[in-house]
Image (tube, rainbow, N blue to C red):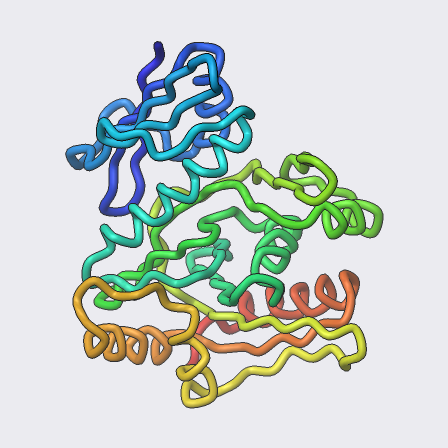
Length: 279
């Protein structure tokens, strides 16, 4: 049995697994591994092999039984995401991905199928270090974005199409069954960086591609849809979101293809490099 410690913003957990499974887990969570967490671990996870498969145990209780190690891994990732959300307290938790450009974070928010994950992937493939996936924690007092670097999950069809148009260079793209692809970035930024831009993507094959900078009033109603439920009340969340959007630049991005997304994101990077924040 091998014992691992994973540390995230405001959350540390212990993870124990047999040697033949622990290598898969250690590789997947490599960017969260630590030997000396700065906070006391809140949860203890254990993988127990048995005749019926692999049991995932959390704090002494079985929460799932899996025949395939990959399925167990995906379930563990999801539980860690919920654990992080519960730990954020007064922070804003966005359903978003994030990358780092110089000393600022570019955060891409959205529900599934809006282009959130693929936008993050394309920004990484433009050479930007990876910061967050699925959950992006933001401290509203400092507007600092903290790292949550789990691998990206996307459709296999998109992964294959992307690799034809723009062969993957800055990460590892793997396929799991007929429908799923996973992407692990090579460069990960582990320290907090200030929020520089929020991107709201939309995809429509019949639309005209466009990257448009918008004022906070245009974004705030949508942004609330991409916030995880707060642990300290809606009023605090409302005030925190307003504080956050007033400190960064806001963009809507309409794409119609992989090529249009790559072109617009290149334009975004150039624009933010020249002038990262509003006056």
